[in-house]
Image 1 (cartoon, rainbow, N blue to C red):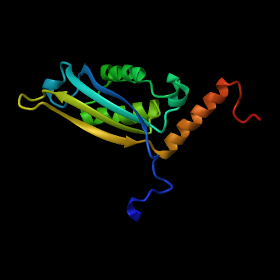
Image 2: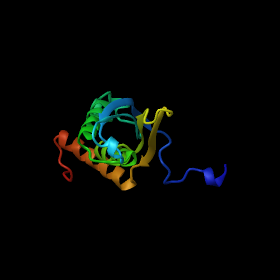
Image 3: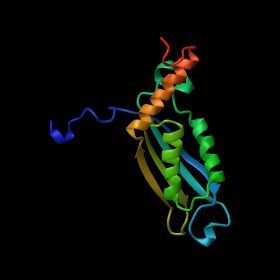
Image 4: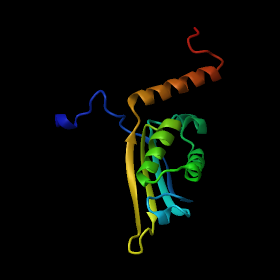
Length: 159
């Protein structure tokens, strides 16, 4: 095996369970041109959020994975409340703050599209990919463990 392709001790897990929302359509005010800042325009958003082997595969409980219904609600709230101008900034907010920060995804891909922005173009947009920092992932895992202990009646640090 080529040493450059060999897995390392710090490599990402071999696989991720990917929760996705495809084709979320909503109107929002976004853009840099005056003509874009007075009336909502349509956006189409695709998100993919990866988690290493979601516990829900074993437990069959929605609380052990990313609930795409809650993600959808959060995205719609963002689109109603944001004051961003660029699709890049919107995609970054969705990826880093919402999917990684709030929902604990390890990896995300976000695509934000303005359909029919120009008469001669099907769509314009941006697609980004982000990985959660290792410390963020470890902190999320620690928080989940603490919540599980509290839910079981145990307190962290007790023996």
